[in-house]
Length: 220
Length: 227
Image (cartoon, rainbow over all chains, first blue to last red; front, side, top):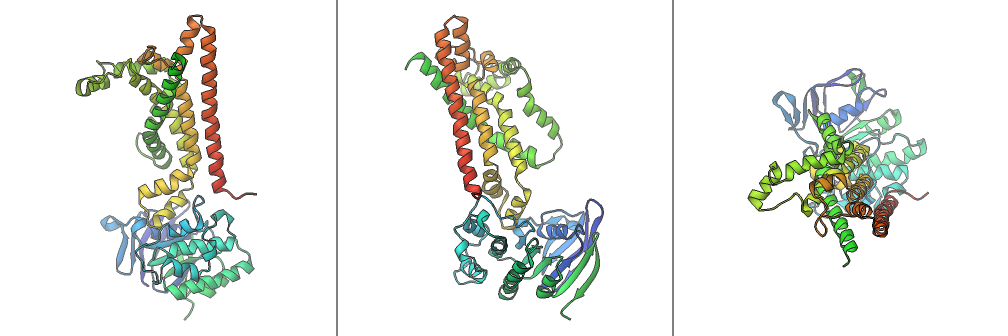
């Protein structure tokens, strides 16, 4: 993966988010204290916020370039986003949540087909249930599957295990590892948890008050 | 059909039609006010609310001037479509629509504002366009407030008096509504007829509000986990 984040500038409440990095690892962790600008950075990459200035490029595709007024809308970016609150649609059953962004043109046996994604995440039996009936771990797997079913070119995961106890986290981490290995989708993974970062990520970018404090390859 | 039932039927269908007709514009206005900041927004908010706080008779006078044959809109309809509006059933419809519009907008606006924008944002990342987001996420999640606004608008239309009498008059068989007929019956000393119409008004309003509550309870049951 090559994700260019150049000259990013986004005024936030107490500081300006200013990022200038190039990410090349399969899974990059974004770490830092609460309020450091991690979620805002993901929102910028997903196209949910407009920066004051930025060049955001995924592989050869420019997503945002304020210098020439280019801003691809979120629906055209092919980026899957699992936000911290998961944002599962409460009025739709699990199956409709999963199919919301599913590409129906995909053949049955393909990597991102419905059957394959729900099998990898072991959520087949949840399809008929209401999202309000799911446990914390099930909700996370459904949100992850929903994002994967759009065949994304990049996955943004914003503290996907926040609020879970250690035992449940330990049960969910292998699913995330399976997603990483099976689908080979590059990921940006926001987390506070060293255990998650060590288990899943190749590279770590540390943010503090909107500035990149460090960038290190942890598999080196 | 007796004259009283004709009045009830006329009032009910014109009120229902006015509620349906204001729905698209009401939802659009509510969504624009709830989800966007734009120049002139506070002016638009004031204009939308104005019929709620102005004397209905004053609103009726404005409508009469606009919808009469010499008015801007009335003249246009008369000259191009050969349709008269003032002192016809269409004037009743217009008066009810204008008077009930603010109630629909205010209720739907609150409902839209309460929908977590994160749901809409994530729907966009899943490939949905703006119309799909609106109809598949925003409206279903704001459904209770929209239904509540429609009930309020319908009930307001049922009871409309001041603006209607100015722009439509009280013409038996043409523009006479429940409220106008109750007033006329009392003026003529026909208390029995007035009380019959009063009873029907109460029953109609009760059925409207009760069915709305029932619908909303059903909808709530679909969204929420039983304890």
